[in-house]
Length: 231
Image (cartoon, rainbow, N blue to C red; front, side, top):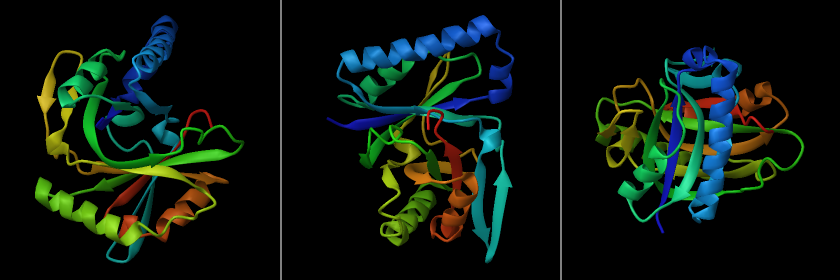
């Protein structure tokens, strides 16, 4: 059955203004939502990410390494669910059942390939999600960037720290879900568009930045590094 990723795009500043009762209801709603996905045999994986202000974005332009501290944009990646569904319409229907705050949206994207360890956060230590970002004026150009990154990074992961990853299909094959509507992709209005995620166990954010800075991910695109909430 096809796999889809539901990317949770949150406005952290707005969510920080929610009342304690609203925040509690949202957290409890996500717990109930995960249980419902498991009951329907649709759940494959899911994680919440620590605030983007704690993260880093690493890129290299013209041979110059650039490391930015978060937050990075109005809408931040707050977490995800990896699900299986009959088709995109069914995956969108699953996303529409997920609780969201008024300023939250979901991006539902088909998965091209995945190999994620579901027990990645079960051991002691820090686990970081590395969101692979690419920028291009057209979707075909963006696909070329992602293909180049894929070709030059497939053997660059440290085996003792690698916890899996996935590549997403182009945004034109996805949908964006808001509290009031569903929109077709692509979503290239953003400066950089996510093309996949990988997960590594690292001793610190500094170690994660050091590893990222030596890869072709940041030569052709960028990596946004965020620790898993439960690691």
